[in-house]
Length: 456
Image 1 (cartoon, helix red, strand yellow):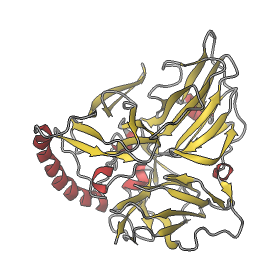
Image 2 (tube, one colour; image 1 turned 30 degrees about the horizontal axis):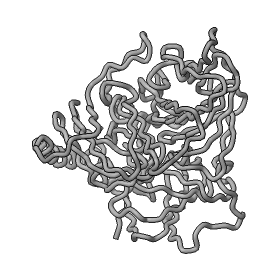
Image 3 (spheres, one colour; image 1 turned 45 degrees about the vertical axis):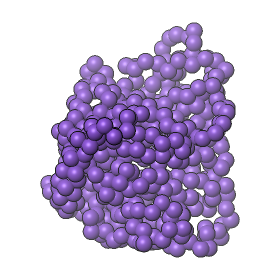
Image 4 (cartoon, helix red, strand yellow; image 1 turned 90 degrees about the horizontal axis):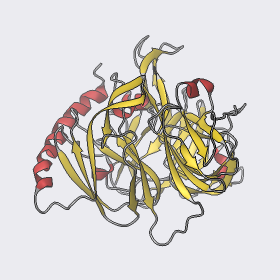
């Protein structure tokens, strides 16, 4: 189906792809900087288990893509080679980059034509756990966009000395595969998945994570799922949450499980004080049965991995933030931008259309920001869906989520907005240029749940 958004994209892709197609020669010129990192986008036969193989597109022939480490404030050059059949772009999620480098064509980032390559030179900021991924349209082809294998971990190490209070790091990526559209109770379409994985493998088919008794392990966990919220627990252990979306939380707290919406990241320290063989996996039985789990194995311990089933799903952003008084309304100087989310039914068996303030991208309004000004996004979610909203090139402070308490100090770039409620966040407009705002569910984004802020 050719949506209005898709029609707008064809023109943008054609002109931008031609532009970057011409950049291939420039990239090969003698004056082009030698890359510090090379990413190759190419078809890949991905094996979640011997019985579950998926033809996808991946970075450097692996899923997830390579772990990239960069130094905050130190310029770096990345070469991107597109050996896939479609125009592509890499989004550097969570970084403060100019729109032409950020990796979203809605902001003006050029697409990379099939067979072309380009060099990007930028200075990574801010420090913390970020990620990189494709930022393309999928529509009814549930193998493209975030449904596929183009996602990877990105860690920006802070400048200066930063003594770690843990012994080592483990990176874990949650993903869902084999999507197909099914009709929901209201007649609209939603994706359902065949397989769920951690680091590209179903439970029992990947290598165990080896740990030692007494270790403090920093677990960096990313939900790269195209559409699904995930809950994870590590049997016999708890998580000390110290960072969310790459930024330190005001109040680190111990929890028995983590909830991650699409594109959210949590960094948590786990004290390895329960020797044995355990499962770190999805709390909901049917998703763990679909494969979402990994074995955590202590040195010298053998046997079948153990899973202790939690009885409740527990998560509250406010426990990691500083409390605010009930009458607190954020910064007095902040200018409110009201945003109302809803959908328009398009008929049984058809994708619904998602809207912000009654309009669907690319026909959404473009609020104008002034550099240095504080803004409050007042997000009224009229729909029956929760939405993981993402603001590009900025971070925002969470003021309250739905009917929850007022809070301060919790900085994020993705936030799950509850259904039938109002949520408020604030940010300072300190990165001029076109700035994309959208739901991070691939299907909702494809169906119009996007808008662009522009600076005066």
